[in-house]
Image (tube, rainbow, N blue to C red; front, side):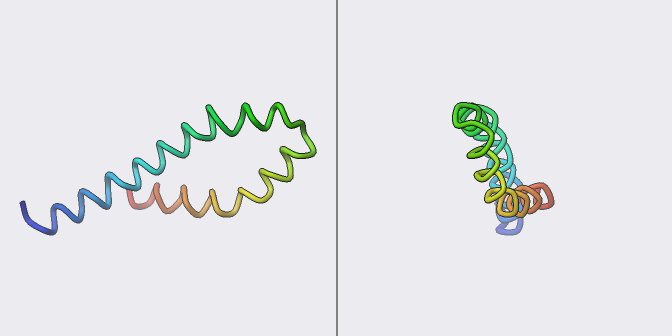
Length: 64
């Protein structure tokens, strides 16, 4: 297989896996945990996570 095709496939598959993995983590791990902690703590956690998550997910979307 040509090196270019391998690189393009990796640039498609890896960000796609990050995107899907992030969605699964948020839906099945983080959201239930934040519901248990209550609004004050959940708000603080989400406020600290928004910027890194937006950058990561937007980059994954654009590369996929």
